[in-house]
Image 1 (cartoon, rainbow, N blue to C red):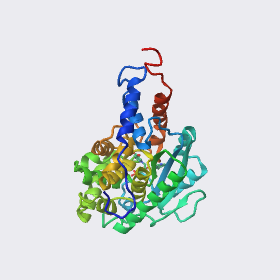
Image 2: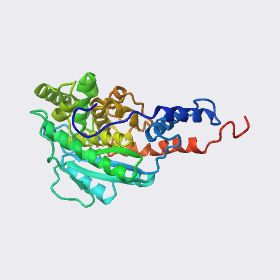
Image 3: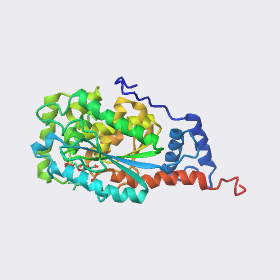
Image 4: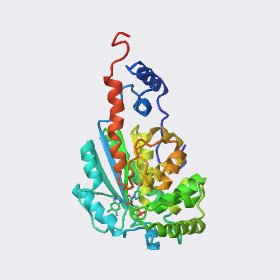
Length: 345
Ligand SMILES: O=C(O)c1ccc[n+]([C@@H]2O[C@H](COP(=O)([O-])O)[C@@H](O)[C@H]2O)c1
Ligand SMILES: Cc1cc2nc[nH]c2cc1C
């Protein structure tokens, strides 16, 4: 259990309902197990919602936004100002995630939990803990209290989703520089060699990868994050939007809402949440496999297998939203397919 006084308690999935759901899948007119991962999705959704015929008709994507002091070290192909510009783009409904969310019938919630943008933007939830993290290459990115405050922002958003009757939430984020803390979190929490976890992010040249690795190495030496204390890791080498997503995962799981993990940043947040409260694992679905090398390692560490592989590396929750129809397919199949008894077998 969490010892953070965050007011979240995550239930184990309903084992009896999952057994009943499995029995139902086994009666459907198909060879046993032939719908593969869709069957596992349907059974897990049943356990999450406590009913053999679950629904994912009410959907949302939460896009947590934050900036990163470590961008001063030259680890991204874009300047921090792009975070604010993209927030305005989300607000106009014209970013990639808006387009896909419209297609999938998902509401978009954009949250400024830590950007450097000084303007209030219409339609964006203003919940700034601070204007960007500090440079983790010279000291901690945040204090433990700041990380907790950002987690609370996410928990509050998840509670709002619960009130709205949301059944599935996609984890989205926007934050120039945030593949750097994501690789750092992955290295500390999985113990995997750092150099195998560094990727090009928004598109830095391959020749810059050793520099990005050296910056993260320096951050780990300066901060000495404790691998046994995920909150310490999140505060010292994480990000405000990553912490916000940790809160969304914890809050959604405790509210019985299924969670679609997006790319490497959402994955890092899911990993932190999983270390804080192992029971959230049962509520997580990996939507796609990002091109960032840390993503596979993170998903393996949580025990998740990605549904899609589209060579994407955008973030915003785009991959997670794209996987929503697969969850819907599982719910429709179990509800609408004939059983062997129905066809007289
Ligand atoms: O989701 C992913 O796997 C992913 C991979 C690479 C980049 N991104 C996005 O690009 C930004 C971070 O890239 P960077 O190079 O600035 O660290 C941030 O806004 C993310 O949403 C996202
Ligand atoms: C333009 C742009 C859009 C993004 N969306 C998520 N991360 C992003 C990074 C950039 C640079």
